[in-house]
Structures are given as structure tokens and as C-alpha cells.
Length: 309
Image 1 (spheres, rainbow, N blue to C red):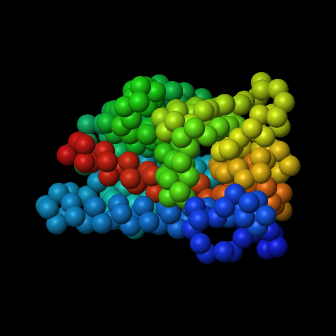
Image 2 (cartoon, rainbow, N blue to C red; image 1 turned 180 degrees about the vertical axis):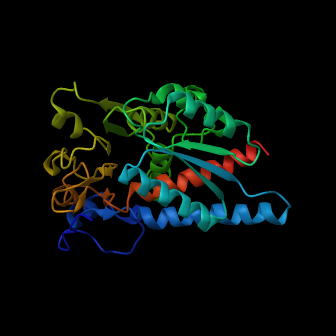
């Protein structure tokens, strides 16, 4: 976890929304407690699953497809299946060898689409190089697309009629809401334009009335763009790409990146210590956005089961 500068991180226990702008800038950033907020969402999902059981309904079911033996992917899948177990969601791990064919995955997805016990299907990315992810993601029944990546679900989000929403962007919206941040009318800058975070995040922020700028590898003068942000969301996978001195005083900083340095320490895409001296709120890495992604996956699985009993 990034080293917290104890002299600059505020430990005042008032809610973040009670801190004035001047206090926030003077006292250093408050940490957005992603783990605690995610725990609350998991508890809500568990209560809803328990209520379903009392009413004679089966537990929601999630199938996770893992191809190959990538260690990081295996860890992520384990986290997801463990989270399912904790809240009473039935999970099924579908593991295929690294040399599995495109046709084998298509067949597995078709089986899961037809399985009445499975409400959500998640294809763990990235896939081995010989496989094409887009047609596989599109093959998942949109009603079971709990990752929210299907063109149908992205289209609904773009048309302001969201159904199953991408987990990380939806989780970030929840983080902002639970932290008392109203994005309406604020300038949001998103660093990174991936299909997983950056692009759907832009749609989410438009949906809540924010003015959105998306930057990417062709963006010139990134520091100038970042300095305009009332809300900064960074998701590129480059350690310390965004310098603390670029941050607008009082900005809210959401760091989606999680990178392992040679020393073994995990860090984000933002220079944490320097940014924390200028921001009003900032997510830690780890323990910020990551737990929200998993909690939102559970939320989406419950929603899919509710919409498709």
C-alpha cells in the first residue's frame, strides 16, 4: 500500500462533506474508504440474497471463465469467488487451458447463457493472445453481462437508460456518492480511454451532469488538462504517471491504477504523497477502487437475478 504521509493526511473524523475547501487544502487529503464502502455494499447484497432465500427463491448465480494460468488473473478470480461465498451468491469457476480455442469458449458461453441457474457470466481478461475478446464478450447474453461490457449494455448507458453497468465505473460513482461528492456541474478529467474504465466512466459522469474531458496517449500537455479537474479519475496502469503538482488544490482524486513495483510495493497511477497534499479527497492504492469493483460485481449479479427470475 502506498506510504501515507502522517503529517499531511487528515485524521479528523468528521464526514468529508463537513470539511471546508480551505480546511481540506490546508489539512491534506482525506482518504476515501473504499474498503469500508465496499463492505457496506456487500452487506446490502447479503441481506437481499437472504431475503430471496426466505421468499423461496434460489441464490443468484455467477459463472467466472478463466483461460490459462496467469497468476494475476487467478488471484482476481479467487477474490471474486470468495466474495460470492461471503454474501451467499452461488459461483462457478470455469477454467480452460491456455491453448483453448475460440470455438471452445464460444461453446462454453452458449452453455452458460442457457443455464437457468446462472444469472451472471464474467470472462476474466486479459485472454491469451490467440483469442479475440470482443466477439466473446458480445456472445454473452446481455441480460447476464454482469461486467457491463456488451455493446447492448454500453449502448443503454450511452442512451441514458443504464441496465447492467461496467463494474469499476459504477463503483466509482458509488464512491463519489457515499463520499458526499456531487459531480453535477463539476469538471471531470479522465486519464485513460480504455473500454473497461475510461470510456464507460465518461458516460457515467455525463449521466450525473459532469463536464467531461477524456485524455489518452495522443493527448498533448496532459499536465494542463489534469490541472483543470475538480474530479480526476486516472486509469492507465503506469506508476506515478500523474504528478502531485499537477493536481488542482481541493480536487477529488480517484486512482484506479494498481501497479506492483520491483520492490514488491503496490502503487497507483498518481503520485500519492504529493497529490494528497493538494487534493481534498483521494483513494488509496490498494484499498480504494479495487474493493468497489468486486462489490459492484456482486450488486450486478443480484440485479441480473432480480431482472431475470
